[in-house]
Length: 354
Image (cartoon, helix red, strand yellow):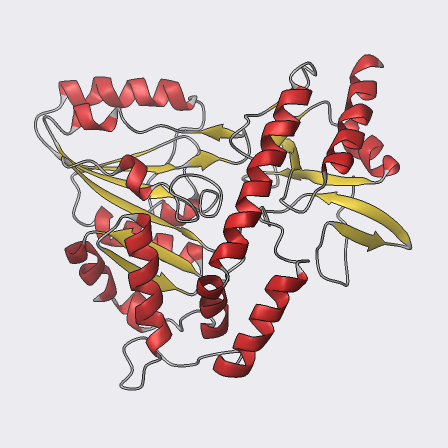
């Protein structure tokens, strides 16, 4: 499948060269892009706050929404503090740079997002996550006491694998451990309500830091770092925080104003994920879990067959243009059971024809 160029917003249904397709792609997990109720909230806040705020967070003139958002989001996530950035990538860089300078050892999981990989640190993609976990445990046993920084994702969205971090506690019995998790695909989807996995993996012996994009499930252009009060103050003291423009104040206020709506969308998303997983388990070419709305599939020629039938799915090389293509079906809260059922029936027919 060649790349597709669109000239309108992405919604559940898209128009391409005069033909309508159902969109099973992207990261708008809560389906807010085409939701009129959310659009009205955003429009109202655009009137109140404007479209942009071109001042540093450390300027002598500051908007109250930034402090309020930091405090509300971090509290609901279960963290002592939060630091907003204009993107999840910038948030990850700020967190990883600060932590990397204070560690003796840095270990990166195979699927670690590049946003939280400091310069010179390589992730061994030849290992599975479970193999890497075992290697970390063995290495920790051999080493004398160290300051260890562990970098990883809450979920691998390309393999549709949700990761667990309870094993890190055993490393902290001997070492001083900081765990930095990228929650970009967890915010709005996994963990504590809309607020990610911080409270799930926060352990007394570990310094936990979570960073990530708010622009996927939460549909809020921006990023955030969550952690202890001292850690957040340290990150905010960096030039990368003072020198970067903050996110749109209107979008931040819209996220706060739309909590009930977002929670309802999250409920629909979980129902869709559970429904799709239940009915695709007999199709061996599809892998996924009931807890995450992404399903990986093969063979590659299904991409074009699905498009011919009216379905646009995700298919691209990652992490580089030389990498193999990853084919995925991405669900959102906006998909109906009828639409999911029709897709499942077509996928079953493709599997039978192999």
